[in-house]
Length: 120
Image 1 (cartoon, rainbow, N blue to C red):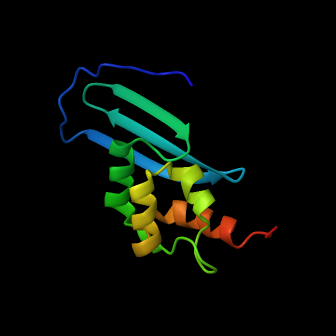
Image 2 (cartoon, rainbow, N blue to C red):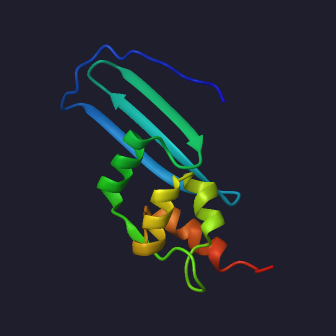
């Protein structure tokens, strides 16, 4: 995975615009982050696969909210799927199993699709 770094020479102002979103592409979670300032003519964007970095996910949650999903059991998202997507610690996984998982709407759509898929 390549790492990108950029320095923006502008202070946040009324012209600054952020767009951050998630999508499911070919069955995989993808995220996009776009920043634009018309006053200073600055444009920066980034994208990735999987769960976005915390500061980007926070913007998505602020804009779209979350959906609580059951984890484990016959009606919940399989523990293996939660581990693969989020990489939680064992205490975090126990917490999700006991109280559910706060997912963004797009994450919930992906997880529900995996849950309702064919069982082996």
